[in-house]
Length: 157
Image (cartoon, rainbow, N blue to C red):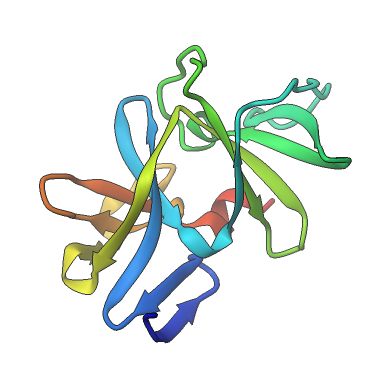
């Protein structure tokens, strides 16, 4: 069992001797990842009820074992090209800092990646754009480039 050296609650990352664990998923054909510790569950999308006058990123609400969960389309939240949902779409249940459970719709969940600190480039202000506040960096596991997201800013407000 690996020893936990540090924990970053804001980004939802666990460090194990120079590594961090991320859940990797696809949005509009690109790879993204979030810190594994903030993910409570991964679901196939249940029926979702639209909510009138909700924010544009909110698809609606659904019931998960009696718990009412607000579901956001992560593509809308990140201003990524929207595409029809496929059978591979999943909802990531995450806990906001307020304690509320929020669902994030993604196109497909890939795997858990353990990235060494040397495989992570932290974001700088050079990113710019509407989503720069949601990006904590870029992960470069062997043969891939993964955009690392900050769940705290995504599920806030």
